Image 1 (cartoon, rainbow, N blue to C red):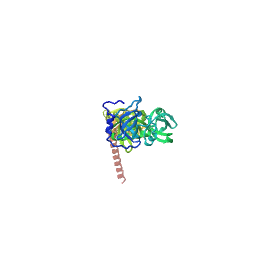
Image 2 (cartoon, rainbow, N blue to C red; image 1 turned 90 degrees about the vertical axis):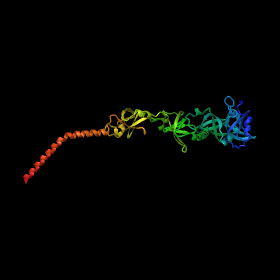
Image 3 (cartoon, rainbow, N blue to C red; image 1 turned 45 degrees about the vertical axis):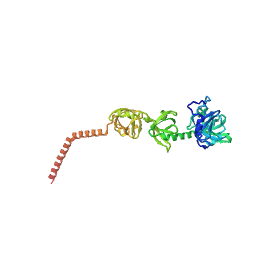
Image 4 (cartoon, one colour; image 1 turned 120 degrees about the vertical axis):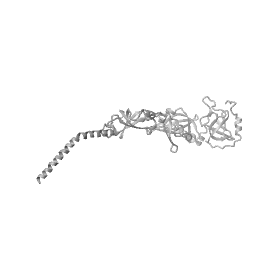
Amino acid sequence: MNQETTEPSFADLFQESSSKSLRRLEPGQKITATIVGHSGNSVFLDVGGKNEGILESSELMNKEGELSATIGDKVEVYFLKSTGGAQLFTIKLGGGKNTTHLEEAWRNAIPVEGLVKEEIKGGFDITLGGSVRAFCPFSQMGLHRVDDAGAEYTGRHMTFLITRFEENGRNIVVSARALLEQEREQQKEALQESLVEGGTVHGTISSIRDFGAFVDIGGVDGLIPISEIGWSRVEDIKEHLTVGQEVTAVIKKLDWKAGRITLSLKETLPNPWDMARENFTEGSTHSGIVARLTTFGAFVTLAPGVDGLIHISKLGGGRRINHPREVLEEGQEIEVKIEGIDNETRKISLAPTDYVSSESEETAEKDEYKKFTSKNKPVKKQEEAVGSLGALLQEKLKNLSK
């Protein structure tokens, strides 16, 4: 390892640590250490105590066989045990040549590195440290189910936790999922300090359900409900989103106790109602498409994300109907007039352009009644006159009979 003049020397770093008290570590304990030197197969660490820590140099080698870290760099390591006055550490077992501490890794939950050799019945054959066989069930390979697990994992180097160590190492079961869940829990704690309602997050679609899409936002999954995918009505989520797709979403609600994060994709998109205020005014007429029919009316799409409602009472051309499907069908084009619009609640009341309002009908009826009564007034006077003459004759007949 080459040292630059700006880097602290081995002697300087150990001089600094000489005044520190002895630090007692438990096997499996994870700490942050500082690299203070390198010799042969060992990297020397300042672990915050008087005793030096030793890490196998192969754990820090890159593909070219060179050390990927320099003096002064900090590394996350696990304590294995003390031996000969030295404290042994590892980044993850199996990453280097040392395969003698697998039992310690099992007892102390220290990660191990393994090669996914091949798919077998119930899971995968895993090789630890180049020679030790282990088994990982399908359900423990990752956080989410993969359709073609063989193609996804075979040949990959992955990190596992040993969940079973039996028969002196002849029966070893490992789990990648257990380690991923631990990491996600740590990430979740960090997210609780940074996420706020109304904020924006970036993530990847991890799974799709009928009710919405789950998004991995780095430590926890958030849900985009189907109603929050777009401003227009969404019937099939898979027509809009795919697993693995990267998205940006707005945080609608945070409920850490219930473990729920509600996200909105549509709030990152232009709001069609901003233009609706200008384009759709009361009294104007428009051409729309019947989007859906309900027992109380028909929803008509005037523009993407902007729907209005024709109440059932305004359908039927003057006759009473039981359901809008008697006169309309979904996908049908229809000419409508805007009777009312509420930008606050985003509701538009519509009527067919040939609809005559009840007020107009009442006015027309009154006009017809006036015309009728005015035409028949003379008739009414004649009837009254005839009635009066008959009464007079009856009166005279009465007098004659007396």
